[in-house]
Image (cartoon, rainbow, N blue to C red; front, side, top):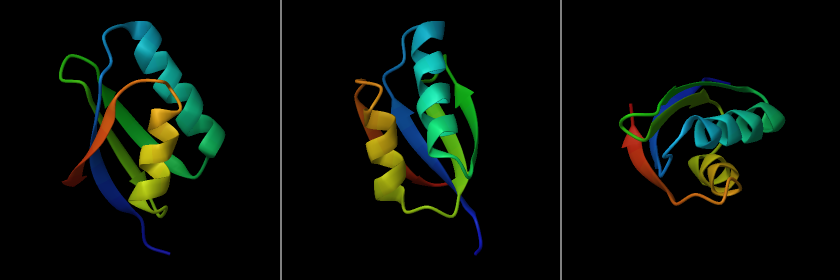
Length: 70
């Protein structure tokens, strides 16, 4: 399975928010990710469907959108 990198917007305002994102993504597993807190972006490298990744990000309770492939 090839992995692809995706860019998401997540409405993170603080370290606590990025911590929540880290927790849900680690729980999902099989993903590598970087969080860009100042720009409210999360870059995820994974072989999972973008819908799955987006639903996972939404579990933080923050507004999240899929921006596109990176």
